[in-house]
Length: 336
Image 1 (cartoon, rainbow, N blue to C red):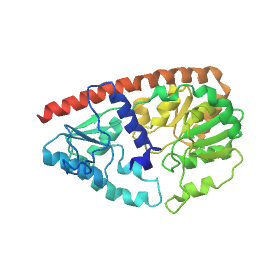
Image 2 (spheres, rainbow, N blue to C red):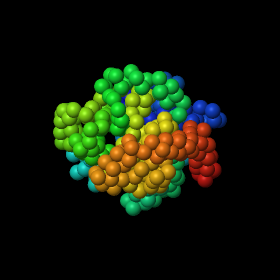
Image 3 (cartoon, rainbow, N blue to C red):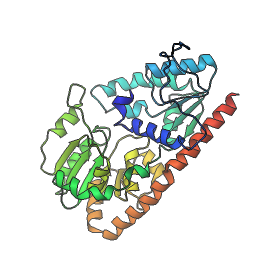
Image 4 (cartoon, one colour):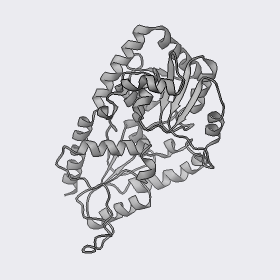
């Protein structure tokens, strides 16, 4: 599924892992398939430890191979039933069945990695019985370098002026789409969502409704080739998400020194501090007041931007590298 998920948080997190492991002593094989090797005709190549970032049938094959060969298995819990709901048409109805499947799949692992204590607690309610380690997905600060140079081009391209409120990522109702759009309806600021959205049969009703709304101050860009342009064009990153396991785009916005306005859900309370590196909101009025405050109070805006960068620096790929090394080494030692 890599070709289809490179635009997603899962794809970004996986690339972070690969980049983080480059300076380590671990040799990483990106694709396990070995059936083209006529001298060793087996489906999956040799390995010392398996790490799967997805949970579909081919990941099950890798997991079963690890168990059969008595090799340690690490499964990465990017997805829960809770964050699968409110994504595509029908996803909420499927979430209960997905919970049962994920309980079975994740419980096979010698170690489950998840991006937050919130996710760990969620998995333990299923219950997933494997040991669970918490590790931030991290932020690739280097990939965002030079974003400032794109501001004029991207603002001109999308007709943006004045304070611009923005979000980045796939357009889902779970990510607070309706709240984001109602904010646009109730204010005069420019609102722009940088990211792809479905238009076909699997698109949810809210996505179809809002992406066709034609509000004069609301723009849906679709996929953009350079994410740096999104962080260059926007001023206030608004993310009224209902459920997240971490939210890489929040860390990216913080890394770029943007003021961040978030929903007050447990995972954000775990990583961020209201009034220090972000503003957290509970209702539509809260979000509107927070954006107005940032527009009016330049000292608060600058304070949040500065502290947001400090927070992002606690999630660098060098830290992710150390965490992955520790988890792999610990899993290998415990297995032996």
